[in-house]
Length: 467
Image (cartoon, rainbow, N blue to C red; front, side, top):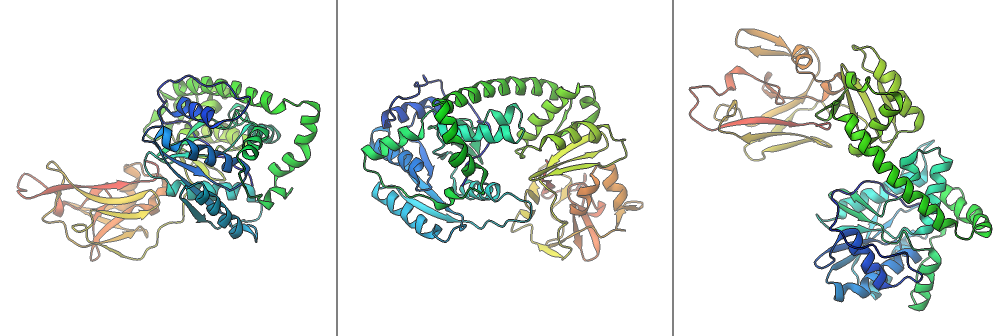
């Protein structure tokens, strides 16, 4: 199966001299490489994404041999995709191999559901990294065993798929995953070097039979194309890696240009369309790519990127266009552009009871929550705020009680700039049939703190997915 992942490092490590690519892979070289990528190893917590194959077995064995001297904690995670009848046996073999190296190993089982037109390779990769992200502790480093030959495959696949500089830069040795860092220390090392290390240290490894399935693009390249390339150009993996490194430098320069272009357009999590229109088409596309990457969204294909940079931005002000791709979408509302994960279905309309005194925050969905927080200067009189409260979502036609009459909920949402696609997800707090509050956007005057309030005060807080 293919392996991958993407993100930029959250912070640079302390500067350490980078070891040259090894003529012979050794554990000592690996230690120097890790210090160059991430600083001192002492006290670190390292987690290896462990398939049980040659590459990850060598990485885990080398790290295990360094543990006592370097002073770090080491463990392994094996992901069982369940895509092959032998996958449970491979998981057991991986755990047994880790046990022989005295490394704790946990097996994570995932389900990969493929729909028509979707890449099983890509879905398996997404499921694998989602499972790994969920298991990582804060500050724990995830290490993968991608090597020089994997980098060659990644560059060729990016070229075949028509990728730009970002895609052709391929895999970075240092990236980010969830709340921590992703490291790929073996990128300068060839598979042949890893195999020599394994033979010299009598290491046993498993062969994942799914790697023989040529329906997968990466396997087809590995089995059919690369042998021919190496026959003609034996150093092709090293030279392709050098090209990827040069393209990564170019990409960092482009990102600097993009950040400067985005400064006048930035408005919180959104971008001002009027500022984007001032950019030349190529500058605009570059800025949008950088913005989407910063929002941790998978990059759109070239056609959809051009659609975002062109027709979506040039649409009239009262339009609400949207461009979707696998893993993300960009929406326009007035003079603002929003990048979000695909908007899920509207929340259920069933009444929820929220005892806010017992639980200060109520989860509403992925990335969404409603809370009551203490604040001496808050606008909510906590002594008068009912508890529990009912939490519902908009049906249409709701009216809000004001001091001198009523106001339509629709008018409030428009006035507060809530985008049309988000209005069905705005939580309404009720006591009986009366609306007490609309998220943190509006509060019934009967429960507002004023000069006569002597008791505790607070505020309502609504966390939204695109905040």
